[in-house]
Structures are given as structure tokens and as C-alpha cells.
Image (cartoon, rainbow, N blue to C red):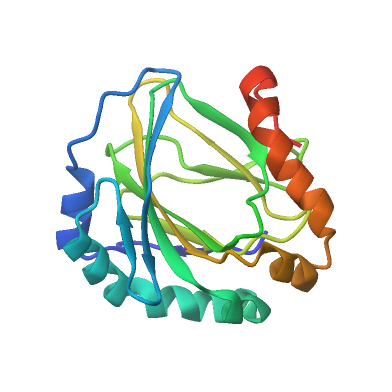
Length: 208
């Protein structure tokens, strides 16, 4: 799996703001996801990050992410439509299974926010968990990658001591079919997986 790590990714102003958002309490085995998006045309959707901060962060980091995507998967760059700044607050016992990101995520990124110690993202050689490697937790450390079918397997979980607060920062598209063509995967099989996975995860805590 080809990925990039950037320490001290966020400006201090942005890191402090995101790390101290007033969020709802989360149960130990649960997760709260707050969706925030900013589109190329200026449209903004915000659940917990102010519009002013979304505009600031998009201006500060968008070119960095576009350059990373150009380096790791240049064929996907033309599909870029919007940036997602999702805040993920995972309970102290929460874990999410090994999976591939959906094709609408052109570039996937996670920035570790709080606390000072927790578990990082875990990457694998295959979907069965072969050769796990943890991208260790360090506050304001960013990890970026572009999904590749059957290659970019990963999971994440809390350390059973503290909640795990992260910023998931992705470059996104709505043209899933176009990205599937670039990746040479079957669009209809992919959409079937995306439809079934929420139910499989809900009942079996697994993904296909």
C-alpha cells in the first residue's frame, strides 16, 4: 500500500480549533460522524465546522492534497468535485473492520487530533489481515492514500482507554462510474457492495 505521512499537517490555529470542538458524547462501542463539505463551486455543507474555517482550510490545504493525488494516482485528478472534512469521534472500545474505501474517495486522508495517545490506522497486505502495520498515532500526523482495488486494505480502532478523535480529509467525486473505469473494476458490482455493506456491517461487523 502506497501512502504518505505528513507530521504537523494542520496549522496550529486549525488543529486547536478542531481538537476542541464541542461534540456530543459517544458510547464506548459507538461512533459519531460529523459531515462537512466544500465544493469547487463554493457550496458548503457543515455539521460541526464553521463555514469560515472550512473556507480557510480548503484554501490552505487543497493544493497540497491535489499534488499528492497527482503523484500517487494522476488519472483521478480530473474527477475532483469537493473536499470532505469529516470529524470522527470513536468511542474508546470502537473498532472498524478491514476494508477498502469506496471509489468516490479519490484521495483518502486522516489527521490524528486527540487525545495525545491512541491507536493509529492499521494497513494490511490483504483483506484477511496479512502483515498488519500500524501508522502510529501522533497528534497532527496526517496519512494520505488513493484507494486501489485489492491493495489499500486498512482498519482503525480505539485503544480501549480513550475516545479517538480524527479529521477524515478526503478529495471526493460523485462520478463513481468514471473512477471505476479508471480502476478497471465493475461499476455494478461495486454499487452492489456499497448497498450491502451497511447491512452486513450492522449485523455481522464485517464488510465485503
